[in-house]
Length: 269
Image (cartoon, rainbow, N blue to C red; front, side, top):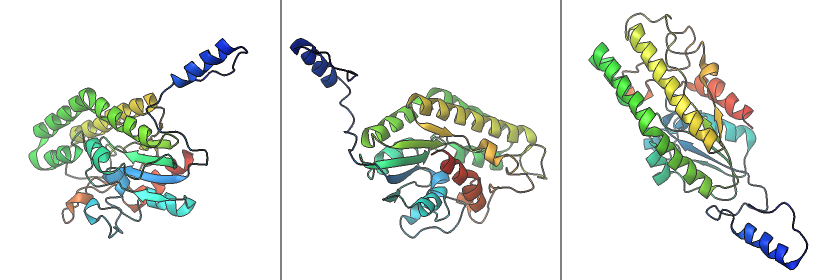
């Protein structure tokens, strides 16, 4: 670590210089001018799957002009905006395909990541199509993955982001609980399945929050914002099963992006 003051005398100067040179060298130098560019990374929740208004560029990623990163960029006019989040992206996909725009001038990075690693899409498909026992078994397997493997995956992703964007403020956003228990739904999953799925989201957010804190990233917990707006509530901000457009199932609607996620990002600054 760099010395806070340098003592007089040649030997003290040499010692201070040696200490300075011994500091971390793995990251790129912090820029002398303000870092103001914005890069939005992550999975379908950051891409805006479910919000509609999908962009022509990177169509396979289902990036939406109504996703919270696009809305934030429009409102705040950063010096540059790179939107690389992509549907179904795992942490390894983010590392391999999304970090290109990061550099020492990047001032803000946002991301949602971890849900695809844990196989939430497969879990939901199992719960909807295969019944109670298969659903609870799929949830249990996802929880085991979150406890055992996911922390290391997140650590590798967060470290890669910091190496490429040493000056950036990094905001990691979590996932909302899917269901309002004892709500308005009639039929579909039973209450035990809905409760198990909500508990799995709570575990996922807990793991993400802990790893983000260890890397000194800001964690934005969206569960409170979505309370009262889950599936089976009177005013849901999440899609249930969308049979005619399956990728949108269990993703935030446009209000979920603008009223759920966006204010949390705005407040995280």
